[in-house]
Image (tube, rainbow, N blue to C red; front, side):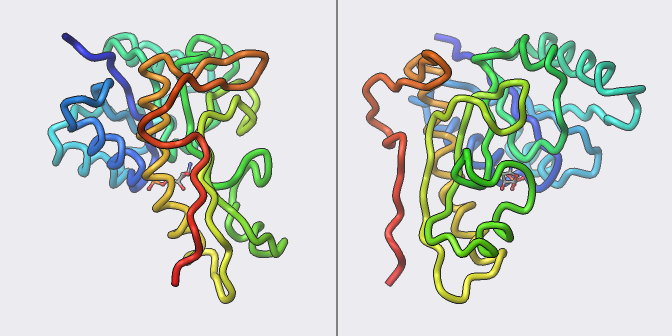
Length: 217
Ligand code: GRF
């Protein structure tokens, strides 16, 4: 049986992309990572995907007149690659509403914070500055407004005494790599259903929609 095809969109190092590629290498994973697309030719993730024999495409945003032109080109590449799902994995570009609407319910993103807290950039710095005791990561469906789409899965980690943005970020990132493949599985299996802007999960076996990681030690 052929599996549905996911395109992973990156702009940088691609560690979340790698977690998806690794998960998808298991025979029982329900999606194939069909292509990795970067808007930056220098993205380190491209070489990492190639090393795993995953086809890559580069679509340099600087070569397009505006956002609409870039998004139209991106949509054409996704159609060419026969993508069924799109996973944003550190893809550092805002997408137009028209593009997002075409992929609604089939495009997901990973964000390094417990949404709806800390939308946008520099989430670890902001969490530390606020003195929160719990931080984490969220996988959500993408909607036209940034970082507000229906939440599929979250992981919470403790903020520890003496944390820096780097140490906290590393603790969060380790959990991103757990929940992103688990969330893509739920979506691909049709078990993450959007009702009234919220996600209902049909029975789960792989990982709970909320993962709470106890403090180390
Ligand atoms: C991750 O922290 C992800 O949550 C955010 O961008 C970062 C990308 O890192 N959207 P990587 O390229 O997956 O290593």
